[in-house]
Image 1 (spheres, rainbow, N blue to C red):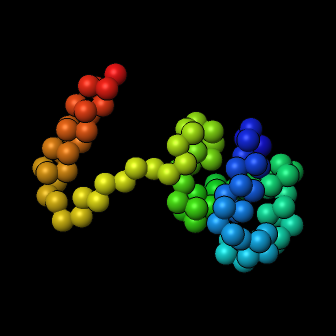
Image 2 (tube, rainbow, N blue to C red):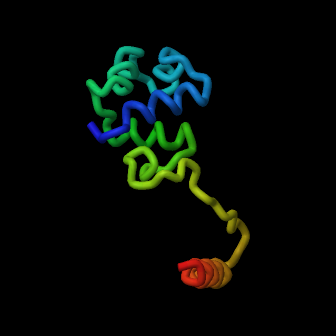
Length: 100
């Protein structure tokens, strides 16, 4: 089990106002599996891990303890041409370097 994962899973479930039964229905699991995840007796499969990440809109890095940032920063680039998206990446990288 990943250190801190059980607590994060329980915290996220409670923050999103799900009971273990409701969450288990959403993930297609039994409530006892959810309980096992939250007490650290069981580890989610990669498929379930990704479903949890998607359901709560958090990054895998957050769940794994690699990042403390719960919500990823997203930029909607819908409708932009590939070269415009590349320009945005260059701009973002330049801004990041300026903050170091």
